[in-house]
Length: 129
Image (cartoon, rainbow, N blue to C red; front, side, top):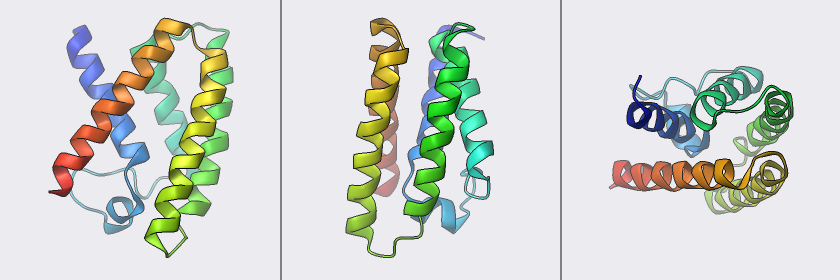
């Protein structure tokens, strides 16, 4: 798989993880992660990060633990009915998660991770219009 294709696949995977709950609850075509458990989402995200960021053997369990921690927190946030509160809470959790990942990832890996998140946000915004 080419690096560009891996990055694209990784960005899409991140999109599926961070998409607002309306997509996951709507069970729309192509958005298959909505019915996954937090454990399944965290595992999938870790696998994508392992591949796209070339995680080391030492980084993988740390990243996995962070992904699981926040997948569980995000699961609770999905139940918030006020979309403004839900969105703000998602943003706050993502910032906390980024802070934890920054400690585990190398500067280059973290830069690549942030780039993929930004690409995902751009794609999400394009899908909503």
